[in-house]
Length: 143
Image (cartoon, rainbow, N blue to C red):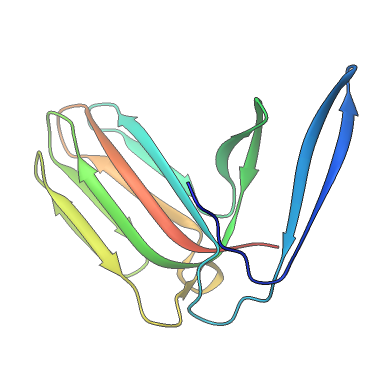
C-alpha cells in the first residue's frame, strides 16, 4: 500500500507496558472536497433490524486497541449487499433499496457533504431477512 502525504509527518515512539510502539502524526491542510481518510467494513444486520453507523465515531483498531475515528465530511459511499435479503440505506436525503447482490456508489458533491449538515448517522436496515454488506466511506476526518 502506498501513502501519499502533502504536508508534514512526525514519528515518535511510545512506551506502553514495556513495549515500544511507533506512531505517526500527519498534518496537512484539507480544502473543501478533498479526502484524507477511508473506512471499510464488512457488517451484519439482523432480520428486520438496523445497523446505525455514527460517522463521527466509527470503530477502528489501532495497534490492536479499539478506537474511533470521525468524519467531518463525506465524499463517496460504496456499499454492496452480500447477504440473503434486501437492504435499505438511508443517509440524509439519500435513500436506496439494495436487492441481494446489488452495489450502490454515491459520489457526493465536489465539496463533500458535511456530517454536521446531513447528520452523522448512516442507517442500514434489513427489510425482512437478516443480511450482510460491505461498505467503503471516503471523506475528510476530524483532525
